[in-house]
Image (cartoon, rainbow, N blue to C red; front, side, top):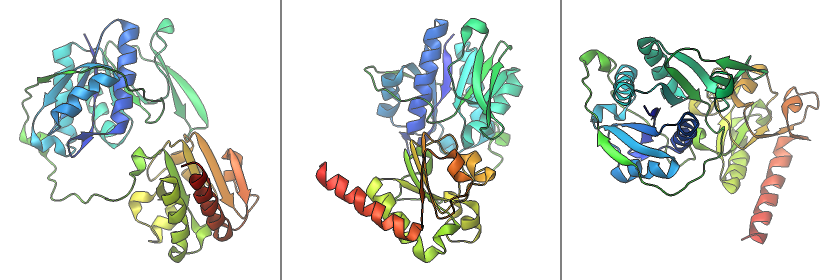
Length: 325
């Protein structure tokens, strides 16, 4: 009766956020006196799956169907249900990301399971099965008690630090029967961003808004991101104006991120933008308007012209790195 956790990969390499999900599932398993089993879908390297043992998984169930290299919510849900039934699992863990949001609700309906999306804590088993999550765009927290026999938790990425330990998971093949309906959406092509730190994986993010005045000024923001080893992001008006590609848009209608450091440059901080970034561990705001709403959410704020501040900040980072190499 293990805890099942769905892991994700890119090109056969398991994503960093999935290590967190596996460790989270393993901690829950210890609390309820069982083990953690990971589910890997598609073409995943054997060493990658075995390596999940370093994060607490004792076993990995592998559905080796190459069609699962791309997200097909029906097929993913079917595989997760099959794994849960095989292991007689009463707790299922996914990430609260694009894949999790597409798959977990389907599984919940099929298994008549209670579901908490965006979990920020381990379950409190002394008071039932109570999990903390953010509500109202991060303005408040709710404590949800899952009463159903089968429980599904969607973990908010970058909530807990990941600690790599010793261990090697046993990999088992899992046979799952799929129908054509499970692959109803045909993927013709996939265009992936290369040469950049993926936003979802980034621990450091430098983000720009209309305060940069135009796409011609974006180079100074990219210079800072390069020195920090950070990903770049933007507000919705910037993406809508085609200054930056839409995959960089973070906010209520874009991506939701939780980096350790989020530097917002020339972004006023409307509630829609805050909804996508207010889970960041540390927020630094650079804006020439001292009344910008974002300053209320910031840990640190700099009032001034971004076009003057960013080059000076980049130079300071370079100098710091030179003295600490």
